[in-house]
Amino acid sequence: MSTFTNPTGPQPPSVYWRRRALVLLGLVVAIVVVVLIVVRPGASGDEPGAAATSSPAADPAPVASETATAPAADATPDPASTEATTEEGARCAAASIELVPVVDEQVFAPTELPQISMSVTNSGSSDCVINLGSGQQKLVVTSGEEQWWSSADCQVDPTDQDVTLTAGQTLSTPAISWDRTRSTPDTCDADSRQAVPAGGATYRLTVSVGDITSADSAPMILN
Image 1: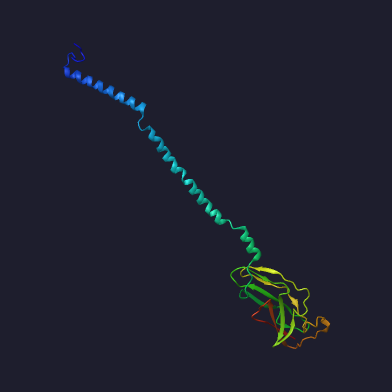
Image 2: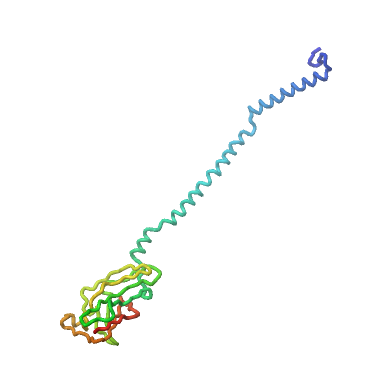
């Protein structure tokens, strides 16, 4: 009779049966491990998982690109609009231009000639363009209600010149001498002009640029 089905030995038969059962269980476990290694159930599912992991990593790139591009676009001005602003600049409003008549002294000896000019200030909050050519500037000397002299009476070759005044900027025109004579458009020869009364007489200087006139006048006392 087979010793496998009827074990014999010094030990009871139940001991041998338990040993054989353990051996068989070990063989089954070994076979299962080998099958799992060869077949690799679920291995095909690893690839979609890898694809799903890489896909989100690819998405942030466009977002980062858009974020970096937006400030660059804002920081770069349009060259065309910059040139237009520089070339065409807004004209100065009369209310934003302050003209002040300037006289080098207030009292003049009989031989002294007043040096007269004007200052032009942009009192507005933005830059603007104004025509400060000689054809637009006018200096006028009066006494009471009477006009005695004007820089426009015998002006030669008047010019136009656009000048940009920044907000708050003040420009001063070159001073010219008033020869203390009375002028008219018909007396452009200095020798034909008459001297104005002196001996303590008071005259006042007002200035204008185009249609803008100084709010105040500057006094001159001629001795």
